[in-house]
Image 1 (cartoon, rainbow, N blue to C red):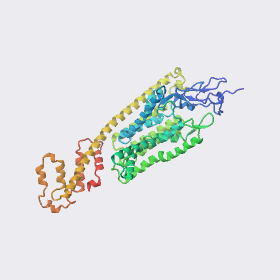
Image 2 (cartoon, rainbow, N blue to C red):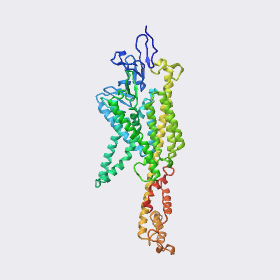
Image 3 (cartoon, rainbow, N blue to C red):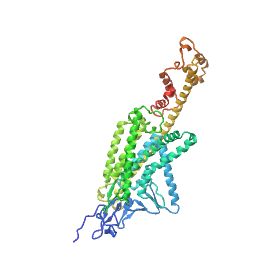
Image 4 (cartoon, rainbow, N blue to C red):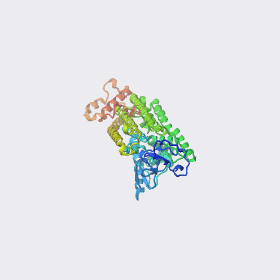
Length: 565
């Protein structure tokens, strides 16, 4: 007699002697001998949920979605290309040219985001972090509604993933994508090095090779580090993913992120070794290095001079000068949850708890100088929390009538109410994310305007300091005729037609102002008086302050010791 078995999870069972096959959204190994294949599979009746859910259409033929193939339907069919792992298209006669331009455009967009967002405008950097973490959470296998596909694809553009657009006619293998993703920062570093070498060769020349090399390194280290930080989460995903294996139906272990790669064969051992090196040098090294560097700068009170790495600390309060390392760690924590936790609901719950911790710490610290940036950071963190919570609502069945069903795979006739509920949630999520993007744009525009005002204020102050230095030189050269205060008045308020008064003040009038008592270097006002004069001039600049304390910041940036000799 035959023993009947319970229908496995993710399977469709017709009863009798017919083998179960995967339902919509699940993958089974059709190469097992039980289905006519040549592999011995101890767990042949075990079916694995696919991501995205629509990647696997299942059925008696174990089908994959359009343009997909392979284990877990994660490989791309020949003569197909995709965008953001969501939308698949046939290559056609012009597919190779079209995808080449698309890949080039994506690389240019990445360079633009790195050059503009990471180093120059603080609000854009916060917006980029918001979209990247949201993009990582969208990779949780929580059965996201298809109405979110377009939004998730757009968000995927800022994730700096090398296979965002796959080439025609053949896509890269998952193994090659691992190496390409890790070498991407090196390629950008080489590009920056070439650019700054050519620029300095044209402007400075090769008179002193060591000085030339130092100048190139000084110019390129900021953009290179910014690019590493912007793509940091992808390095985390690839490195953690290279060490995470899972067992499939044939009893063998394969990489969770790349199921075509069998674990602990010669090829995977090389991947794992490289991943460990990157974890030590980049994944752990970058946040620790940023923390130590910024703390050292603060300890040495060396926060004024432009060193190419100012974006690491100039936006933060002095007590939280190291906070940029926290933002980097935030990317690492979400990547760790994504790659190392297997159960979708536990993934989502862990992400929600981690985000709640980040919200609390940010609310307590308020680390940014600008209140607007503190508020923007808090709002985006809350937005990510809402996004993660909504994902938890997509995974289970929400209505009583659909408990035990897998919607929408089980058909519209039984999933109508469930699909309608989740469609409303998806609409709300779309609206919330779009609203947050608009808020980010609004704050970014204000931030850009403020930055330009700050630059203008700095130019005003530097002009004033340059004139003051000239005055000091003239007064030191001819102490009998000039006093510094008179010359400052002459240079800065001479247009108020006080020539007669200035001429009277330019010569000594009594014994206290006698040239005999004013020797070179001693006829100048005190340091405190000069700082006060420069401060008053700074506050009279014809600009609004970029943020509270902007003029003070600009003043600190220009009151160098050589200017206050």
